[in-house]
Length: 462
Ligand code: UDP
Image (tube, rainbow, N blue to C red; front, side, top):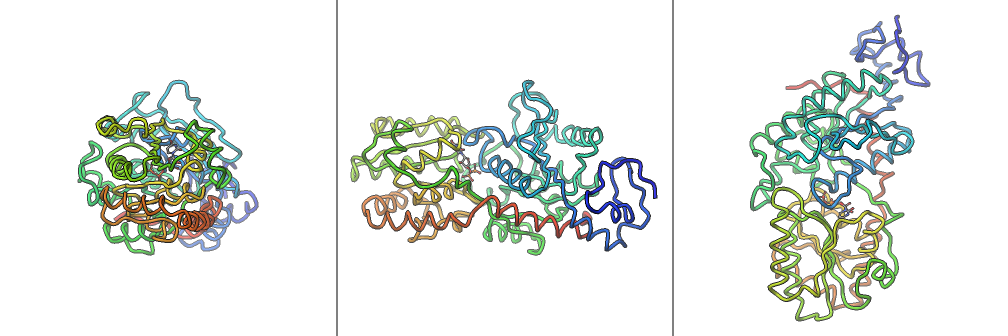
C-alpha cells in the first residue's frame, strides 16, 4: 500500500481506509482492494462521513433574502450547513464570486466555510448568462480542491438545477455521491404559473433537470407533496427521494408582544395588521395580497397591510410598479406600508406585529415564510399548493385557499380578523405546529441520508 498524502484519511479509522482505499483527485491512496468488493470499506466510509461540498452556484447563503435571487434557498443553505457543522460534518459551500470585495474563503463558523469561486463577470448576471459559466465554475471548484486536498468531499450536495449541473460533473470527476435539492422544478412551475418567470427555455431546463435527477444518488424533498411531484412528473422511483423537512430558527422566530414589535419597526400600535413577506414577482402573488386587502379595507377600516420584500426576477420591478399603482388608485397609500427586505432578526418583529399573514403564491415547494409566521404565533391564509399544504392545517392553524382569487383570500382574512377567539386558537395551533420544525432535526435527517449514501455504491448515469 502506498500513501502519498494523508489529507483525506478519516480520523478514527485510518487502518480500514488504508486497507481498502479511496479514490481521489491526486490518487493519494493506492487501492489494494477494488472499491466495489470492499463491503467493510464502504461501511467504514459511511461511519466516517465527515465532509460535504455544498454547491450554491447562483446565489450565496450570506446575501440578504427577500429580493433578487435571495430567498428560501439562501436561508436553507445557510441554516443547514450551520446545523450540519454543529453535528461534526465539515461543510464547504461553493458559490460564484459576484464582487471583487469578497475574499476567496470566509469561515462562517467552525466547520462551515464559504468559498467564492470565480466564474463569469463580477456583478449581477442573469440566469441565462449563468448557464454559460457553469463549466468555468466547476473547473475552478475542482482546482480549489486540488490546491487544498483537505477540502475533498465525501458527498456533494447541489442546490437548484444550475448547481446540479456543476454537481453532476463534480460527482463523476471526484467519484463521490451526489445529493440534490432542487428548491423549484420547471415542470411544477410550468404547470402553476401564468407567464414565464425568467428567460430560460423551459425545454432546456427540463432536460437538464432530468439528467441531474437520474444521476443524483438521492434527491431531497422538503415534504411528501414535493416528493410526489418529483416522482410523478419526472418519473423517478420514490426510493430515490428522501424527505428532509426544513426548519425554523426558533431563537428568532417566536411569539412576542405585538405592540412592542410594532413600535420596534415603526408601525401603528392599533388596528389589525395583514402581513406579506417575500420576493416580489408574479409567482408570489403580491398582487393578490393587495387586491385582497382592497376588498377588506371598507369592512375593516382600521386594518392595514404591510409588504416586506424587494423585486425578484425579470418581472419583479414591473410587479412592484403595478401593485403600487393599484394602491394609489384605490387611495390606500396611507394603509399599505412597503418595506425593503429585512434581516431575520428584524423580520421576526414584523411577524410578531401582525394579526394574520397572507401567502398567495402560485407555487411553493416549501414556504418558509408560512412556517416563520407560525413560529411567531401568527396564522396565515395561504394558497393550497406545494409545501404550504403541509405547513398549514386548514381551519386549525390557518386557512388554505384552493381558488386563488382575491375574493377567497379576503373571505378568510375577514374570518380571522373578525373573530378574536378564533384568532387565539389559530395562533396556538400555528405555534405548536411549527415546534416540530428545527434545523437541527433537518441536519440529523440529512446526516442519516448521507450515511446511507456513503455506504452504497455510486449510481451510474443512464
Ligand atoms: N426573507 C428575509 N427577509 C425578507 C424577506 C424574506 O429574510 O425581507 C426570508 C424569509 O424569512 C424566508 C425566505 O426569505 O426564510 C423566503 O423563503 P420562502 O420559502 O418563503 O420563499 P422562496 O424565496 O424560497 O420562494
